Length: 338
Image 1 (tube, one colour):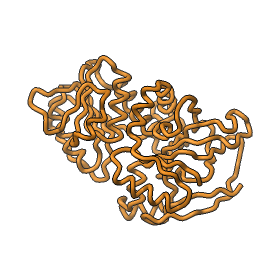
Image 2: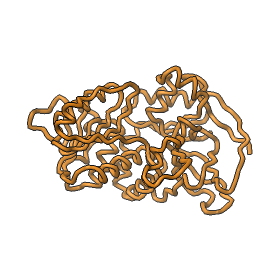
Image 3: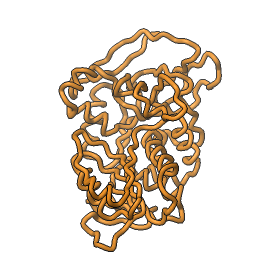
Image 4: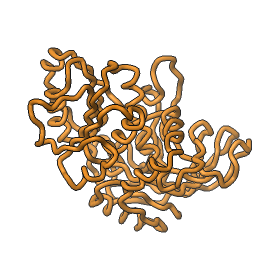
C-alpha cells in the first residue's frame, strides 16, 4: 500500500514522500488525527540541532506526540475507527532491569525513526493503547504526560519517604504536567511550582503554591525537586535546587539541554543528594497515563495548556503551525487532515 509521508529535508523545508508499505499481522494501520508539536521537533525544524546531527538524521518525519484511529487490523484485536494513542518508543530488545526507554538499542520516532506526520502509520500492535473517554485533542498530550509519569514512578522507587514538600522548577509544559500528576500521586504533600513569569504561573491553580524564582529566602526548603526547565536556564535552576533542597533529597531531572550543564558537585556530595535522570517513556507509563486521564477534571486541566489547535490540510499549514508554535506559551496541537 502506498503511504504519503511528510519529511523535513532541511530546516523549515518539508517535502512529501511516497512509500510502499509492507504489512504483516503484527502491525496495525492507524490514521493520525491529532498531533502535538514538541520542543524537540522545533529544534529539528528550526535547525537548532548541530550540523552533524542534521546531516545524519535528515530527511526525517517529525512528531512523536499523537493519537489516531484504526483503519486496519487483520487480527481484529482493534476495531476499525477505534481511537488510540501511539507510543513513539520502539524497543528492539527486552531487559529485566532496564526500562525500554533507556535501552540504548531502542529507537524513537521523530529522532531515530520516522514520526507520525503520515497519512497512515504502520505501527506494532504493542505500541498503541485505546483512549476511550479521552478527548482526542487532550489525547495528543498523552506522550508529554507519560514522561512526567515515568519520572514520578522512578522517583517513587528511588527517593526517600519524607515527601512533605515537592518543588517543581519550570512553568512550561513539562512543569505543568509534572506538578499536575504529583498532586494526583501525593494529594497530601505540598507542591510548589517555581518559574520566571507570573502570567504562566497563574495557570497552575491545582498546586499549593507558586513562586517566582527570585522570591526565595533562606527559609525556603523542599524535600525533593523536579527540574523541568531545560536549555541554558537549567543550570541556574539546578544550582538553586541544590541550595534549597534538604539533605539526601532527590533531584529529578527532566529538562533537556543541548549543551553540558555545570553542577556544584561539592554540595551534592555534602548533602548526599541523588540526581535522577528521566527521559521519554514506555508502554507502562502510557497505560498509567490513560488510566489517570479517565478523571475528567484532569482532562480539563490539560485542555488549559492547549494554546492553539491548527487545521492541517496542506504542507504550508504545517509550516505555519511550527512558526505559530514559537509564540505560544504552551502546546500547539495540529488537527491532521492530510
